Amino acid sequence: MALKYFKPTTPSTRHTILLVDEKAENSPLKSKTKGLRKLGGRNHSGKITVRHRGGGHKRSYRKIDESSSFGLSLVERLEYDPNRSAKIARLFSLDSKEHFYVFASEGLKEGFLVQKGVNSKFKLGNSLPLGEMPLGTLVNCIGTRARQSKPVLQRAAGTFAQLIQKGSSFCVVRLSSGENKRLPSTTLATVGSMSNPTHQQVVLGKAGRNRWKGFRSSVRGVAMNPVDHPHGGGEGKSSGGRPSVTPWAKPAHGRKTRKRK
Image (cartoon, rainbow, N blue to C red; front, side, top):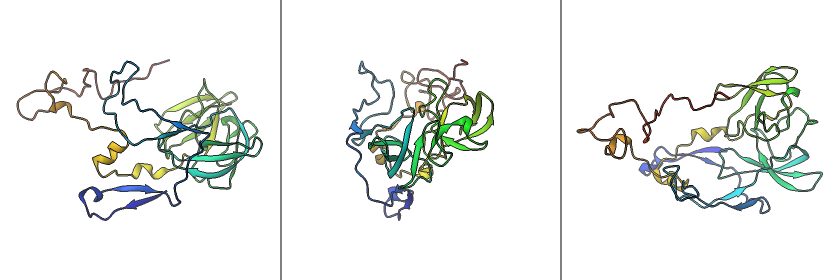
């Protein structure tokens, strides 16, 4: 993916930076694609539970293969997925003669052979247990203690974790957040970092492009009335007069949300 800079012929293109694929857009696999129903941030009762959602372009969902293992498979091509920041790889299994999708690692190209499982070789794009990797390895799509074979951690574009400690029954990986996570040695992970690392350099350039993605605009709390937000009200322009809180008066910054267990 290459970055495209625009000439400032309009105010919106002055700062716009977009990702452009060098190759023509590929149509997804019909057998692994289904329609995606938009919820607009509403739950089963029709009440808004996530604010600032709605609209956006129509999307189709690509089903990612999260099976425990697969044999030697050929990378047919890398594809764009509107539901994820990273690229996905379309594979063809040499054993079952089926097509399926997996998350693509950075550097993975057409014609590569990849596989997932205990007997996999240590090479880019392969998924194997953490205990069989050398220290310092960069990995993505890591399982968890409860779901050791499913890709759960480090799936966003350009992210990776590093294997920093190995034991007889456990391994320690440092996530991109800086957290050190202790996992069983049998936990599967994919060698390499996630694809599309330039995703974070994209500048949308205008509010309309954010609307195409399904995000609606938000209003600052200090611009509201006291009945609408704890920061609202006051004479003239005010700064809220209290530490930042959510519309439900809970601390917005610094409050720990993770449970101890």
